[in-house]
Amino acid sequence: MKRATMELGGHAPVMIFDDADLDKAIEITAMSKFRNAGQVCVAPTRFLIQDGIADKFMAGFVKAAEAIKVGNGLEDGVGMGPLANERRIPVMEDMIHDAVSNGATVKTGGKRIGNKGNFFEPTVIADVPTTAKMMNDEPFGPIAIVNRFSTFEDAITEANRLPFGLASYAFTGSVKTAHALGREVEAGMLTINHNGLALPEVPFGGIKDSGYGTEGGSEAVEAYLETRFVSQMN
Image 1 (tube, rainbow, N blue to C red):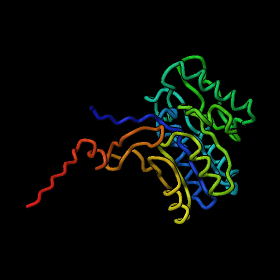
Image 2: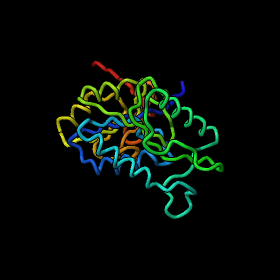
Image 3: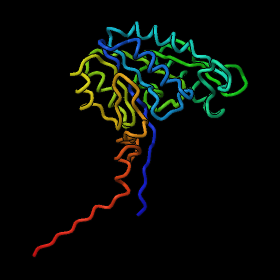
Image 4: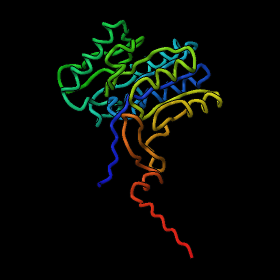
């Protein structure tokens, strides 16, 4: 039988706790979210912000999103390019319309830019219920979903709610919380207080419906090895 490694995408949660370095969290997640217009399998998508810092995070993250210049990536100062194809535009619009009709609020963006090319505004949308399409199907575009949580258990419940488990992100100043996240988050990869994903020396892969097998690191070699057992008695 031929072996295969399958990476099937995800719907990455981002858990930001009250004790996190907020400026650092905003800088890292904004860059990661809108890289390649959000068309990255490990892009952070479901932002879960603890109540105590939710308002400050929203203000800073919206400001960061609005500062991104969208256009031709070959031009100086451009921070985000187009979507992959024209089909992605109605998908983004439909997801946003569905979320708003379910009670969500668009904080910035939400629309196509012009009528040439496949450019879409960096979008931040808040208070999205779990019944909305974008909370269950990966947007795979420049949409950041920002919701609040109160307790550690609340964050874990939402992070693990979906059948996907590729990447996950967290920001906290607590070693205890960090260790608990490592135990409880159901994802093939968890990066805490930095973006440590997809480096050649570390494993890359998902669990649950997000794939099978691992790329990168020494773990990537294991699929090419054969385990043999030899027993001898004299």
